[in-house]
Image (tube, rainbow, N blue to C red; front, side):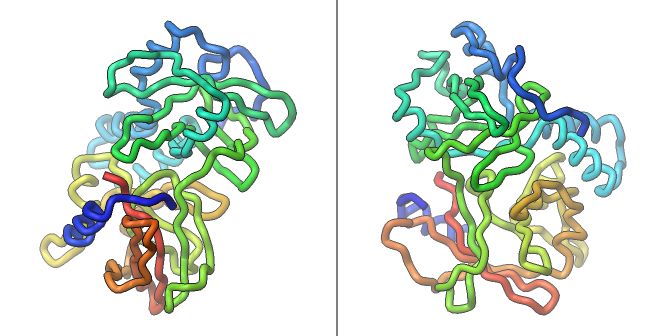
Length: 295
């Protein structure tokens, strides 16, 4: 976890399917792209594909239940993957890579041809969007992911699934389940991006994160608001376990949960964004250690 600005950390607390696994072929996101192709695709936001698809479904099915929306989201997940943001500055710098769309609009992602070893043999460069203009000056390779392990990434690239060997330079944000004294790590998760966990499964193996498929999801997510004496839930949550990425119905996943940020915790001088959150689920208590988003 990298060092972060203390002032923002203080403000944070005060505010409180159907495809085959494939080897190389001729494909848009897998082939060596031209610089013109790179520029065109830099205007394409891959992290929004899944969300756009689910929103189209919702628009076409007014009144669809949270169960139906979540089921559709899981089918869309198999088609598009879920964007994991891998820290990629070290890879780009070590290989002296240059963007395929130099001089692009700062609001648009860079596009790089990133080399990967394939788990089944061979090597291929994929055209990958990279966020490199964030407030912390980090580089994030946006990889549509279905699952990952310490060694591999199962990615969806141009509608096909590729089992990639994870570059040693790549790393993800981590969250940890710790004991009551907040010293011993019980379990770790690699998570898609910098975000706040909003729930934990009763067995302590799955973390839940907000997703926003509708405007009402956006309204409900920040604090799980109350209305007429009842909690307002978004339609779905993103569920991250060590081996599986999926969506679950929010009202079921988050039922009977209470949470609070812990303000008195062991400080880390190298991480001003360090945060701890306590969850109480069905008589059990879980403490999650993580780094809040860099803003």
